[in-house]
Length: 439
Ligand code: G6P
Ligand code: MN
Image 1: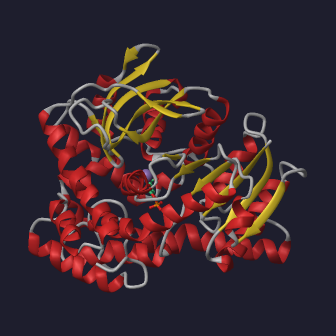
Image 2 (image 1 turned 90 degrees about the vertical axis):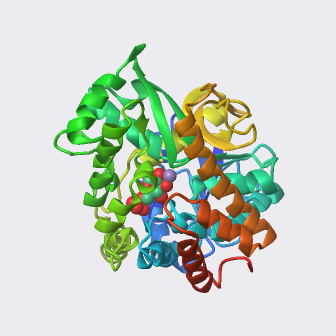
């Protein structure tokens, strides 16, 4: 049985991930679960909920809650990382500052993602070092921490030998919706996909060897990447704002019908329309704080008072996917999953060392990317520009370079002019004083 540590234990996602672990104990046996967070107060609110979830399934799993990295990681076999540096209050800034300048406000796409990257790279490297120092020699970090593309590139640059597998639940959430539309379980789909994290395209969707993409395309032309009644099995992704996100695939496919875009491409391909529909005073961060976070905190409070835990968190594809990936790493299952890996020729006309998102076979020594071949000039160009923006941001963080940060912001497709880039960057420097390296 494994020792598993969750870094970012105070996250609203922790109970859902732990629930996913509990229903898979036969596949992924656990001796101990440890929660680790730098915010001990927040973590202590979530921890009793997590403990209850564990005890409903097992009396034997040891449960530890700590803010001490040595306690958290000593001898650990797996670390699930889901840190949010600056918490939701800084996510709110990431979303609201660009909007003040008429630019997309999103936590991972555009200036918000770049700002979040500048906060997260060095803490993520610190986590790698803790794991290297204290954990089992062959420990794997499975990383959900955003902005995943930038974090992955930062870790590749600064800790090239760290055993980190960077993942995102967006492709698998898209596959869940595809499965729902086609009436097949998502595990039955075999997809081809190329791109960067939150910036890619599905090129084939095979079910029993048959490409069902044409059928999906017809459905999407009417309803977006959702079932007809938009009733999803995953409450997170069926909030009204998410329904809108899944629907917005439609205009992209109307214009560029050949592949199936990751929904996040809407921020880069139709930013004006996005900004028009965003409320600069109430963004997704506010929605999450008022919704998911409040509900979970209230449930924790209620549980403390009454001993009864209300149904306050969801178990979706997010938790199921990280457990799938961990199983494949643990037992060398060589399952095919969409993950973020060093390119190594998988996308023939992107740099060899770029961190790309493609299908890979997950072995106990890490991911083996599947060759997707060369991509068309249009997609290659979009990808190269986004990659350059992300790489310059990583260099800005490492070198403390204002100029490179400004280049990163200027190159981002969500940002119309150099002047916008500079104005947003300068506001963000102010807002991130406690978090960013000195630029
Ligand atoms: C998807 C993305 C994540 C992102 C999350 C935000 O799952 O893959 O990278 O963090 O959405 O969801 P939220 O409900 O917090 O807005
Ligand atoms: Mn993601």
